[in-house]
Length: 364
Image (cartoon, rainbow, N blue to C red; front, side):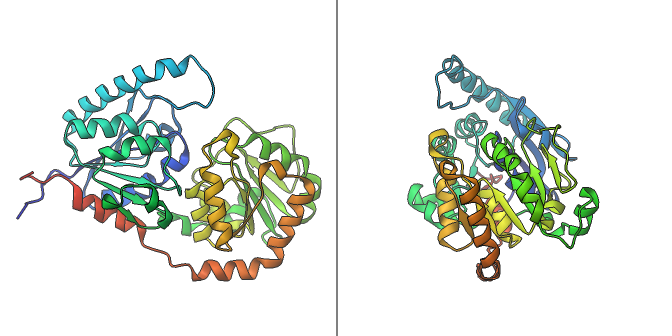
């Protein structure tokens, strides 16, 4: 019988967007409680550095990483060399830190880490949030021992022999939000409806511009919270029923809890959090012409389940937007009833169990 090592050392990775960090953020408190020493590999200047570096008990290590661009750029020539350097740096870190397991949430920073895991014979577990795997996870999956997926349909796109459907990983602190605290922060009336607009951590220029163009009508009915994305606020707009933030962290749970309706892109982590909070949503996914189409697929699944209404960005107009918003208002009791019936899995604990089952042992 294999004896588990006393060195409970885990290496986390993932970044590029907040969605590639959120599962790690949910996992970190459980890992601490289980006695793991935690290190994190991310990029030099990605959002993961901002989110992870301040966490006590987690050591952040930056490496060189590439990026896939859907346009011509001299950087596309440089990137293979950046990835090779990132592999070298990751191998050095793994030899130094001696992790018993690596857990990856995806994003291009994870690719050199997973290749290094294979080179150093360190077991790795990957989590895929979207319905179809992104390019980074497609590259990294052959180097992993186990693949965990959020959508059951994703099993068709991965190696089923080492894949497991676990459902959505939702941060436990998500349910600790307070509408009262949000309204105090915003100076909003808690008895009037609140609409929250979220474009994702990197923002959504078209969606931001559209919402601002409709504020006169929107604010007659709703108090509006607008999460614009970093550097995308418009300081010239002031309105007693409109509040904008480029990015929020500590206050996000309160803001989400306060919302009666959410207008958002369709990143998997975000929409599953809305679902967990039973928030009716109008999804405007990132279009295929500027993405790989994962958000379109995520949104379709939620629409088919009756959790959301979906608008194609190319069809977004004042008419279609307000017609769809009215449908959501009218169907809110039915939408919430369907959400309440959803079979929610205890996914975060499944992740922890998988990590424990696949980490290195002294006799390995």
